[in-house]
Length: 124
Image (tube, rainbow, N blue to C red; front, top):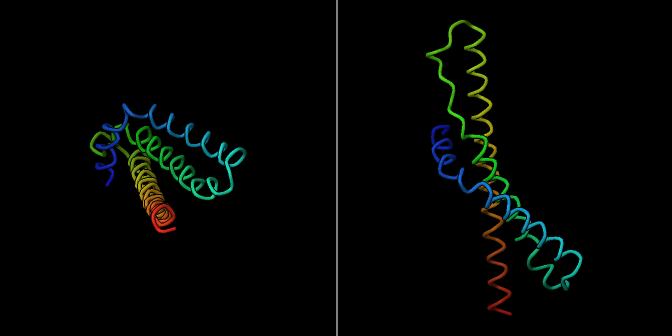
């Protein structure tokens, strides 16, 4: 799993500024929806703006955190350095699991938002 995240991190790394830009656009859209938009627009698009902001931050985190090469046990001698490397692996693996769960949750909520928008646009 760590190798998968590292491989995709190398592909996503050039796009990290686009993810930050998407985050700021989503936050600005959310602010507009809260303070300026009508109640109907606000109700329809607020969750989409929040999901875009969270997803952009998750992809930025993915692209920046997992870019460094994974530590290897071959070059490490002694008990404490080995323990440090295993702890790093464990923490990175837990971060992979957390990011995966958050991405699945945002995907689920995004599909619910799209379903709600389609229902409102075509069946009301």
